[in-house]
Image: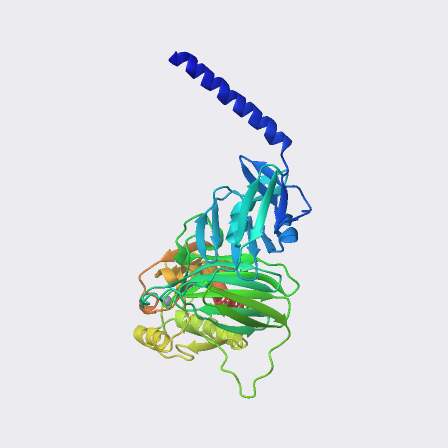
Length: 466
Ligand SMILES: [Zn+2]
């Protein structure tokens, strides 16, 4: 009896599965109604496993939301007047109003077309969703605006960082930043190339920022959001200053532009708008943000440093290159150069790092040349602290590309000037004074010039000024 019943159940299940398949094929495209009116979406909807999926164009053209696509990380942004939603193809995570949610179904790709789960999206934008089996239709109803419930503000915890959840382009000249907490920002415009910089102190990137699925250490987050608009090319973002936990957004522009912003604290959003043109000239000169860069010519005065195979002192090489770097950076309106020495003097190692620390410098670069067995040759880039690794890598790459001595790589060492300086700092061993071939080049003016150009470019790139 039990066995018979089991067989019966199995047959029934099979029948349901088979008929389910049949009805799936027959009802592949349900119709959509919004507030009782039948919509005519440009492309058909599809039911997969009981969930109605709609093409992206239905969301933008029939429901009227702004839809953006980021090919780099295959993310889709959907933005209304009051909300922003970020999805990713193949991911069941969605970011809405700065919060990460699990979706019941992932966005799909079918026949090269992105399909999005309709109910989930509609509900996030405040629509009521129901299914009319008789009509084979999804009914969408705009819910009446819910009364705003004012919750008592939580007691702010001073050490708690504010979290940036997402930055989504809502058009080719505006974007929405969603956050938790209470962020503030400052922005400024820079020329050559045209760009707008937005800094947010005491803010960190969320795990899963912009729907990112890898849970890399958010402290090292940086990346690029393509925009490809007529005015805004792309948005770069990074943790700019670890000490103040300042996150930085750089809008790369095709021309001069101004930025306006509207902060909607109740939604945890800031809407940024970029407009063509230059800001009206202030009647009093505005204090412009200048980065302080300390260039340290190694040794000097009573300390000659290493002595080369032909008897030349390291201190003359380091000063020559340092002065060339100084001349190059003096042309940069966004940089103020501070030299630890400009003549044949000996500042102590503490004098050098005190200069950098006490002036709140942004970058410290110490220039040296090496000594070793006569066969040893090439360039070494040293750093010590975590905040200096990026700078070291940029230096290494540019010096190799532009100067091209034997590549001895990026290394760490416990040198005083890179240990005691608070800001990103590197010590460069440009070549070996004990190697005849290196030594000849180290004292050649055109080679020194190339070294200075590589160092100056690296500093500008690190400061996002180039
Ligand atoms: Zn040295």
